[in-house]
Amino acid sequence: MPAPTGAHVMRHAIVTIDEVEYANQVTKVRLVPDTPVQTMRTLVPDGAVTDVDSTVWTLELSGLQIWIANGLAKALNDAAGTEIEVTIQPKVGTGQSTATCTIVAKPIEFGGEQGSFRSFEADFPVIGEPVWGVSA
Image (cartoon, rainbow, N blue to C red; front, side, top):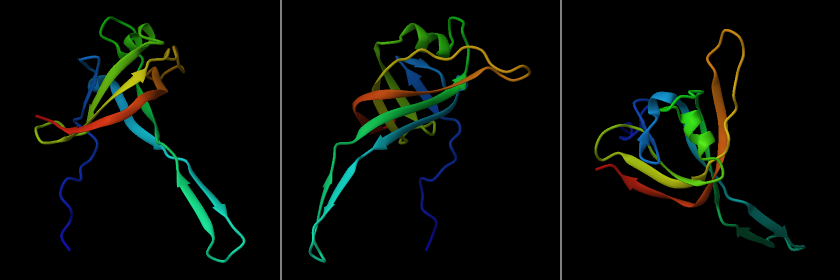
């Protein structure tokens, strides 16, 4: 069986937040689904009732703490409490998978350890469902 096409290493990606490109400041970006499943077992050998609940999405974002005018940390901190649009394209180019979602921005941590880059890790609630697409 031949290897599947479309697999790639996460690099040379595009991360756009409110129409500004920030991939050069981001070290991780992931949309993570949480889909609860409830199962009730009954007293007969094959008796089980299963329900799959609605999916809730979270955006995981890590990057550099850049607190000047073009910095993502500053932009997220300034937008705290508001809804902003995020578009992720894991590989640059046309015909590539994309995901666009609306998140609620939150403040970003400030500071760090001596001798290391200041970085941040944050999770953001996604409003509704991501919109899946293909780059033009």
